[in-house]
Image 1: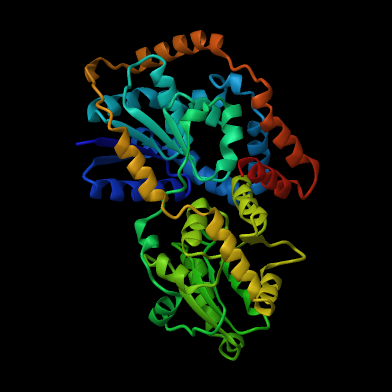
Image 2: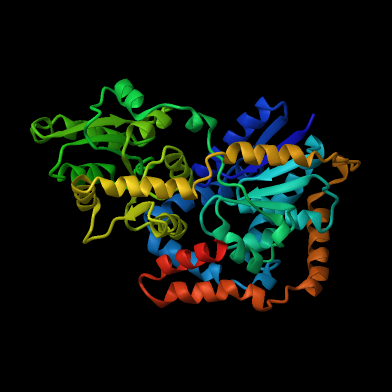
Length: 446
């Protein structure tokens, strides 16, 4: 029986969502699966708080500062992958992860974040880990630090447009597998719009908008609902506030006001919901914050999206990817979500065009494709090492020695790798450059 070890990271909800979807499907296929939340397991205080809470605060409350750091590290020289703050940040986790691997003895290791991939890349330089190691890229952009995880066997991506950047970072073409973004299997379950709306007691003939960008309260959900109430056409609004109770309470109060009761709007306000698939099936369009999990869940239901402004940079890339393929809108000060919805109501054919474009770019069978790929690997990993002999000082010393030797194997950034630099310069050149960026990459792929 194939044994699979999944290393996830709590930095938002997306990485754990992918891990859980894979575990559920692989378990159904008869695999033995274990999930390890890396920082929660190996560093229960500082690093976990920094990675999760620090990321959420920086990317949502201080997005401009977060984006400056992102852009700075995005330009990092791949040949310096073994140096820098990230390596120091992770070195204490390496011995603990090695013990987990040698104890569980997996045949396949999955990483739903680049941090575990970096640690395993470092460990493999000095210690035998002959399980197949696969990382999943969980956005439509190659984040900084992926260059430090090239020691894995495969990287699974949601789009072919990321291949050039990964090659620039140091991955070999045969490592890159574009299989899509795995989401929960329930999103593939057939349910018609009429069935979903009947279940929610909604009208079949009224445009329905699902708002899902307030799970942590940072997107100011009540303000988004107020903007939708400005739309002059009849509207049904599904609000999903996640676990942020203050947002739900404010919207509940708003619904009870005479302004809403006497309008041509109907608002269904949810907190955390286990029936997101039904809510998405009932909607015609979604207002989103750009998280890749929600994007792919929405695309599984052929649901065009409107992205709010002021996003962390990786979510801007996600939004730009859909916009560049005419599968989503990006709200601006001059063209905010209420004006976009007014335009859609006036010209309903727009949504139909966007739905057809979503069908062209989505990979609805990603969960099955990824799990089948894992099953076909069928490695027989052997582990003879004595766990008791693994000492933290010794592990890190061996990694340091291996990194010194590894400097001799620096990448030669020849003409084929310069594509990424060309892309980066194009991105910086004009305000509309991100659309050009993705159009260029899509043409290259096509």
